[in-house]
Length: 112
Length: 114
Image (cartoon, rainbow over all chains, first blue to last red; front, side, top):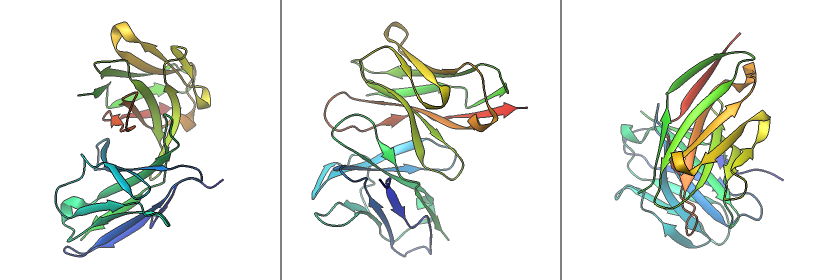
């Protein structure tokens, strides 16, 4: 039973480019969450999705960031026109409809 | 709004000594509480969770935590530290209903001295 799969593990983008981060939840999990971890900080909630629905996006920056969880395929976190301040580790987690997540290994985004 | 405070950003103990990592939460109603561990360049692994059953919760790797409502605390302990316990530990809180959005503490980096 594979865990939460995130790819790529490392992503380097130049300022102004787009970053696409992918997350495949655990089998049987219908809830997906994205978190961002800045250096020397804890994780901050970004968005909570179920299939084809954004349930809570209260942690998403108002501009340049979007997320989706289509009926088929992985969840995607998209960052347009990246800036240096977007450099961070982005973690996806999934859960069944009960407390307790399983986290992926993260995507470490570096903007140069 | 919920919040989590982890006292001590760095904790250092000797191998074989007691590990105590402190976590206090702020919530208007008894929440769900979690401890996660993060090894370098890894994701977070769930150590244990409190969801209103027994107040003393046992987790993996010999860790346990006790929910104390009167103190709004959920401290993590392990009787005897092992070198492999060196990692970053995060306490988190969520509401009981609705979205399971987690609010994390700032983390405590645990160092084990030989």
